[in-house]
Image (tube, rainbow, N blue to C red):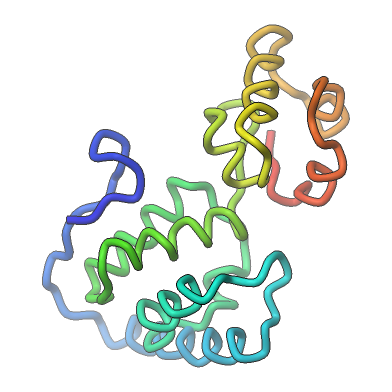
Length: 173
């Protein structure tokens, strides 16, 4: 069993040892071709993956997946957790550390966060904010109520508005 967060918060289960259906093999193979091309060309729209992350993506994902299918839409941290768990159940191979690197990268670069419900650590991870700024968002939400849109979020004091603007597509309300 591997854990992305802690044993108390993770939904991940050990691989069930079941074989992948043939459609899953095709999907995974397509993703693998795309990931290797993507890594070779350095076409990450956000931030370049570090060498350990690239190696983990290649080992864990590249033989089975096309990254554009996986990253075509943003997912919440729990949705990435569920997706990786399903891949493990279908036979994805890697160490706990490799899966954690891949998970953290996907959440940080292709995550989505609902600022009206998320904890500060998830807001920080997805939006790339310091923990203190993410805590300001949560405190403001608790004091003033739900955010009704991006303009309301921008009114939170002591946050990097430029960083929020750059991460706008990762924010939901």
